[in-house]
Image (tube, rainbow over all chains, first blue to last red; front, top):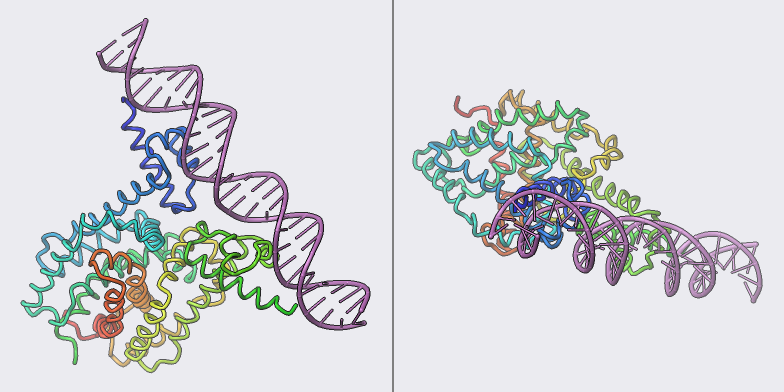
Length: 206
Length: 206
DNA sequence: AAATGGTTAAACCAAATGGTTAATTCCCTA
DNA sequence: TAGGGAATTAACCATTTGGTTTAACCATTT
């Protein structure tokens, strides 16, 4: 019982790395055991099957990401403040683990069943918070009344996540090395808040 | 020699479907053969190895997507026209094959080497065209002079591609069925041009 | 010191997988 | 119409993979 918790954690941490790096189908139980420095039998002793281990990892990782996103939506005074905080925190986080979003996107689109256990923990709660913020700004006359909060939220996610996800393609097409590309992506932290704000401002022509 | 071309094509078409549906690691040569209605040995007869077959499929698919994107950037009179055309054509296309972008994203992030043969066919040519369009609009005083064409282009891609890619997640969180989600995504064709335009307009406050 | 639970090593297994081979069928043309 | 090369197949092969089993080991706990 002494090392059991350590071991169980070590397995989860290692499995997380391997699954994110290689995907479900690409990952090998033997590699996970090797990298965790344990015997393969121990993997099955704790987690039974590859699928169960993966599900544990996936739920952990995805829940963590959603928590991170939704916790940033709490209690912001204005859309402007929210956008500044959100893009900074979120893009910085994504850049620290660039394979993560592609992993989630791919596994979800490959096996939508994976989402079953995630839903309910979050539902539309976080989005409701954001919706209220948007409505407040509408009343103040700061943003266009036709603005759909949900579409806006999706836009914000798209603008922060997608560029990080296609980082290899950007690097390749623009022939930039890893450092240059990261600088390019980091610039977006400064650019995006103004842009998004401008896109919903009430006073644009027409 | 009569049926060889038919067969070679049939293999490529089927392999494309299977690889996009299951990913490289998840796809099975036997399944591709079965779905193509041929013997597995024939697969190797024409394409040698799984990797070669995959590379052929991937290059084909990715080139097709880039062609589609870049062909939409040709010869547009104004940014406004471009945005309207682009979002309509591009989102409609993506919705007709929603697994495609997630497939490309994942395989590229798993094996960046795949990009080696793609680069050069396109390089920054298409982006140059777009850059010129942006500069023209700047001169006319229609958009803010600080606008970075490349960042803007990435924004446009993000706003069109990402929401389609996370369609399963949107469905799940909002508890919508496939038709509702598609309607939601299709709305963006109308919303996005104005939004993007507003985000770069010269006359926003400050 | 006996029991307990975590841990290892190693051999093992059945199924699946990418790939090969050798024979057969097909079709064009000389 | 017979020959020959290309297309196609069934059977086969070596390796990998997820998973299991068994026996022994070790550190605590009782």
